[in-house]
Image 1 (cartoon, rainbow, N blue to C red):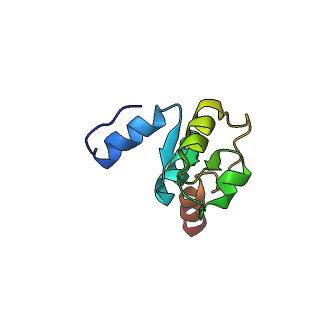
Image 2 (image 1 turned 90 degrees about the horizontal axis):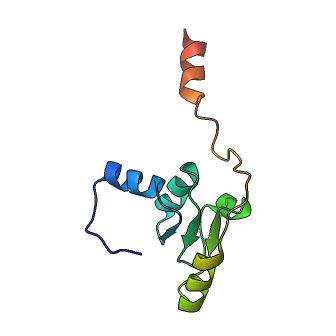
Length: 99
C-alpha cells in the first residue's frame, strides 16, 4: 500500500483499473471498481451497492483493523463477473430506435 497525493479523475480511474484490490469508504468507488473488474473492500458497515457484495466482488469489513487486513490478504473474487448495470449498449439502442 502506498499513500499518494490526490489525483484527477482520469488518473484515478487509470490507477484503480490497474489495481489488484481497492479499499474504500466511497459508494461511487465501489461501483467503479465493479465496472473495472477490480475487487473491492468496503470500509463501512453497509453499502448502497449490495448487488456488488452479492456478486462476490465487494466485501464489507467496517473499520475493524484485523478484519481489514485479513480480508485484504485473502480476498479473491469469483471468476464470474455478471453484468449488473447493463451491457453498455443503451445509448446505441436509443439512437437506433430514434433513427
